[in-house]
Image (cartoon, rainbow, N blue to C red):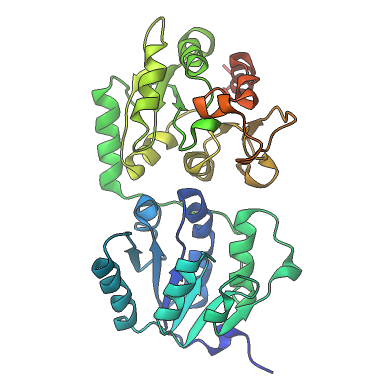
Length: 349
């Protein structure tokens, strides 16, 4: 009978952990780094991600190297794959499960190429892990279960987000430039979404921002992700009174800014998982996706989901107005629903 994989891996192994896809997926992936490093303290751990997620892993104390894959011309990608071979990894762990991640795992030519036994491209692994008996439920559970089956122990797996001090200083300077001091109380409204059909109406975001100082007694800080500035501008166009503070920032700076907020209001997405992992209470607006699996996992997080007949939906059931940013599942969420939830999160005076 073979020994558990952890018993066969050399102490000073070069380990490649592949986790592509979105920010939310990578945030949950951070829950395995410290346990891997604790089991293999002399190993060199490389985490492979895509550009949007690089800031999530590059400052993690258990990660020795953050490797970034960027899609591009054939020659550029070929050089990337050639570099994987040159690094001579002992272990490659595919936690992506898509075709690209499985190919990267295989191309690395690592002695141990690890992945989910039931993944479509599992023939590219030589260590096929069946963790179905652990009955994973949430996205983080799947990632932890795979590493557990390798023979790595966990205490209480949780996402671990680490940002550098230089980004904290830049975040403080950015807030100061917008008139927000260290003693100012503020809440974040993160209005952006990559899916227009999952957008809460801009007018409601504007009404929510206007209500922060009047009803909650705090400042409103409007943010969005890269490429979503036009959505924030639409919110600002609908402001009738005093405009909220609006800023955009790289992910690490936005993380520090979020840490100091009383709460964050946002759609389901990468920012929601980031804020929750940082311990900031989140009010998450769900519609297209059922929150049963993808909800934020913080103890004080609140999900607002109306669960109408067509939600969750797909491209076959989605209505024309959804693609115009006026989906019924979001239309039924009222501003007062959000404000009532936020009031429960405010510290008692």
